[in-house]
Length: 439
Image (cartoon, rainbow, N blue to C red; front, side, top):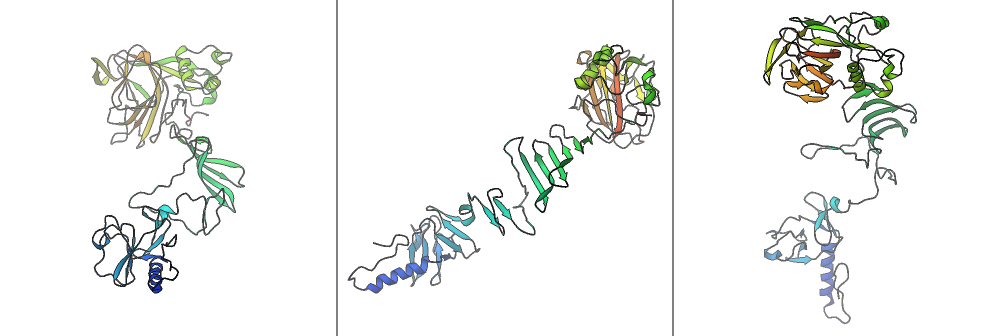
């Protein structure tokens, strides 16, 4: 009976020619101890093997190796000797310096077998139950394998954390990633305890905040001189008693009339104040853009009533109705890219937003991207319009609002703004600051 692990023959008591059995065992030991094979990719024996060379027989062998798949073939004493591997055998590959491990059925690369399922790994460091992978090195490289390279940090649920923590003497100083929710944050601290949000990206809107301030809108300055107040007043400090006057940046045409529909008064009885109730259409707009606990306070502003005149320009025909420009903005130099935002409501007739005009790069209605001329009906109520625009080659445009009306049609317009650059202005943004807002 041979030995259990290496299948070496034993010398039997009173055996004749004991040296034969002994030499057979030595040959097996010579082949199996410190296994180093030439290759594991051959299914046919090499034609000129070197004495003592060893091979792992690949799949579907033939010729002198027939039927010896996975065996260790050793060229010994001028002939092939085959040794069946046991699970756990390790062989060095001379072709690339790697290692193979036999799992009982296949020879597998060392890394795909022995390094699977490890509970701890320390590279030049000591891992523990918290830091199960610990690396101490001057640099760590994660390289591509032919194309892209992506490092993934996955957390179990939204309230958990997936982040990169930067430390000084093992005390946190900066952290970036998903921390306690699904907003992407950059936090900093001076002591590792009191953290401050430096940068936050909202996953729902894509809006960026720095230090708690919304960069996308909070720092935008309205280029229109009267902001949303629709008055000629130069100072908001004395705005309380100012009556409506059509803003200077609008140029009515062909008899179009711009007048006051109603005014938002912060002290109105609708929200717990002492002054008169708001006009219902003004209240409807305020209800749609402000939370219930903030509707009473804020800057006062007018809603303008626009009644188109006897004709409109640059007409288009939609569903057998002719629409066109009832007013223009005055001739003025514009930035290379700008955003126009306002609230509009159709009263007696439908309105059209010319989203397909050449100077309208992108148009959003209630935050939804539209790419064709879009009709707004009286039943739609207040709609928020946000247009990313560009000027003509001479850097002006007299139709930045892209609002088309039918002859004698009526519309309500509130809180218009124009700002530098292309910005996605949220639906709950009211009057934006400008140079006249606080005097």
